[in-house]
Image 1 (cartoon, chains in turn brown, purple):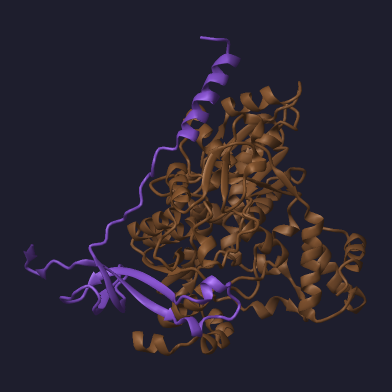
Image 2 (cartoon, each protein chain N blue to C red; image 1 turned 90 degrees about the horizontal axis):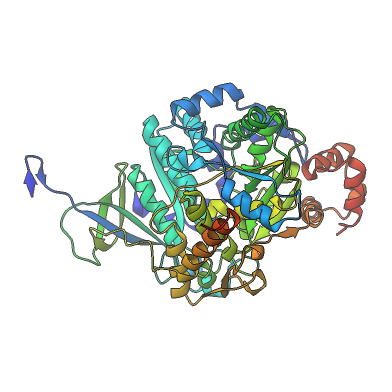
Length: 476
Length: 105
């Protein structure tokens, strides 16, 4: 088996990717394509064939969902103390760490693994350094499927990110085979080799099943806040990486009748670090939920291991903000010390943004942080900051302005140092549109059909007129 | 320890080069381009072997993978790290502020 693997060299395997991915997905993506650009996104999502009720039932059988919605009264109190009189929304958090495997990713994995079994695959593969690996492994264990997880862990010295090392351990705890790679985009190549070798189902984060599984989270948030307060949450904040979290949450909120709820995505600011660099890899203290994934996945969602990414956050987001690594560690500490909830740092990215956003909202409104994640050895502020120090990153107290990704982590000196930076969605939309024009190999919007403009408008959450105006500025 | 089924199988970690530097994709930063694309996998060692030997392991899902033996009975070495005084101080400050807002006790 292995000699065959050595001969599967890069170009030969990459050339077979459509065939390999097709066999591993059970989805005929071409069925949803309408010409060179347009994809019937709604039809693709509907093709899962599972209603929201059926998804909730499958998840319930898999020990997933119906997590507690907790009010963070002490953090709210501190936010109000900083806010002008009358401002300071009530901060709630959905304690997703209570799902089997310890994160909201179990919602996505439960449905993917269920589908793999229904289609008759013997096992599942997922390429992920995040909680999704443990989620797929746990769901596979529960449903009697074999599981193989592929994760980017080590630099060339063999030094592993503690957060990812822990996730590798968790995958093995649930009985999965784990492939731990060094830094590089060839993760995709290895993924293809393993899919071909095993014939397993590609439990990608980006299939319609994976995204559909998150709808229940948005739905629970919407209905629970309405029951509690009599109206929908004013704002929901989601930690943003590949985009599935915000996409599925938005769909669920809509299903719960919360169309007016504002959806804010939040990422840790790692701008300036190269995600494919062997050196930079261990100079970051967050391995998910950061701008290194968040921005490129907004501007080009189809940079994935599926033919068409079902996570399309630009269709749903109202705002996108970034926060510093130091502020997230600080808020993680406060969540433990003021609220008695010790939860993993990466999932608290959205809570960090929410702490500041709450100060700008009326005090009778509700802001919901839609996830927490488990914490543990390696996946903990002390572990991650110790690792940062060992890798030459300076850790100190100081305002947000002192943070330099890969160089300095500044832990806020005071609560008012917890701030966010607005990322201009209009610029992201322009970048998305420029990318689409260039992929089509056309110079400007006059070469687009009416259907194509309508599609791009939906993709960017603009009216066709607004989209056309923006397209004019994107001419190649 | 042995049992009726034979000697106890030993858990091990192997490593294998997936792509040599010259086989890697062209679009890489210089530091990454210089090193091989390498993977580590854990499983039960088949037969007796020394560190550095090419061996076969059986993974937790029963698949065989071949590579260089790196470690026998590898421990999970990750921990909760060193104390981070900056965070501990931050916690004390926030709890103090909350107490002061409730009226000093």
